Image 1 (cartoon, rainbow, N blue to C red):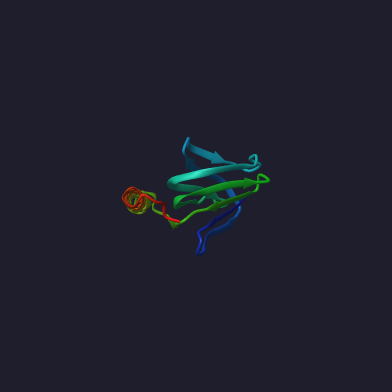
Image 2 (image 1 turned 90 degrees about the vertical axis):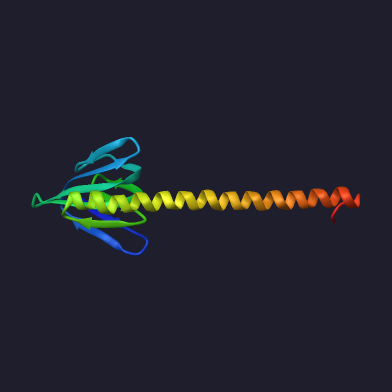
Length: 140
């Protein structure tokens, strides 16, 4: 099988001769073997591992993404960020930890941005409402 892991800025992995791949989505861990049915899933922040033709195990930490299998031979992963490495423990502790912290910070920023937008809308509605009552007319 052929594996391609890409980010918006680069091709992180482009390898042919993959014997097996293991990844994780919202339902848990799953495996891909040659001649797998066409497949599409959204990946969790996790480690993707695969075994190459020479029986070497490889790892890549992914910051979520989409995995697709095409024609039982081509595996494509598109992700925001990916880091390869041979030390599973180091990837798990340092890289996945950083990915999770970054995602939590993004969530917090989104909540704050939404809160600011709602406050601005409330202020506009309040201003428009008080202007209509005081002047007795509408803004046209």
